[in-house]
Image (tube, rainbow, N blue to C red; front, side):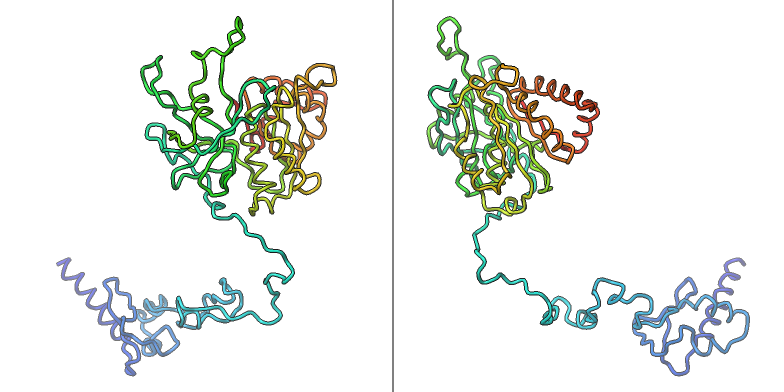
Length: 434
């Protein structure tokens, strides 16, 4: 009984709808849906503008009024008139009035030529043009091309001592060819796995991480090399004053002694702490000791030497504070001097702290923290304006630097703890020590 009643009601609704929507002109045909709503069929051609069939408009019974009220399931706006939304005025066609041609031409559409009053972007005939390094500008921040457990293979191309004979120790600049497809950016590091077995663990030697001292294009500007600034790790016997070969650094000595053509197991690159800022209007302060100069050499080559968009867009100033024991230990001194000549006037400032030859305001040896203290006003003003500060070197450099900054801040009435927290939150504080 219930099924018969339901079917009877449905049949009645169907007959009523068909009667209400009957069009003697045959301009519109409708397809019946189970929900008892009416839609134009796929073969329909809607030619009149009203949304309610003509015969339904003349029907005065209650069911007809109800059906007309809900639109009979048909569109309540005429199609094609763009009365609901006009892409040209309300969309992103920017008033070109070219909608129909865009639709007609599809993927072959070409925008109209600009009118004569549109400014020309062509190069002035007297403007100099230079080739620009650009093929590695959009590589993001590459990481882990290879991992220590499955290293890639680099090849030593050249190495050489870069400090004078009277400077203590041995520091070398090492250039290595990378495997195809391995790239990095300034401020990152690469691991080197020295050959052999560690006698202490009877396992392969652990990887050593080295800061990269070249830009992403490398010293050869081929985008396929990397450079390192490496101090040969040696232990001098206090009794004899001679190096003890049994206590030498395994990886640093391997790299410093490696002949051109030597294959090296490498991993990485890694690191996002020491990257240059994206904002080219923010000053950069670099504080390093010894081989901590490595990432800063990469920064400075990118900002003042290489012909890249980054160099041309950099509108701020760079300040390098480098600490070494003697003048003969100044790393890349000639390169930095050349950069100062090439940089815009005042854009690149260098302060050297040569501890065994220079004295601070109190008569003691001059270290990088003393340079910060003696230039405290400039240092803090730059930080307050958003400058990025970078530290790189032996981990022992940081405690005296932090003590100095805290003391200077106290004298200025600044809560150093709060200020340092703010610098870190703003990504202005970058530290890489080893």
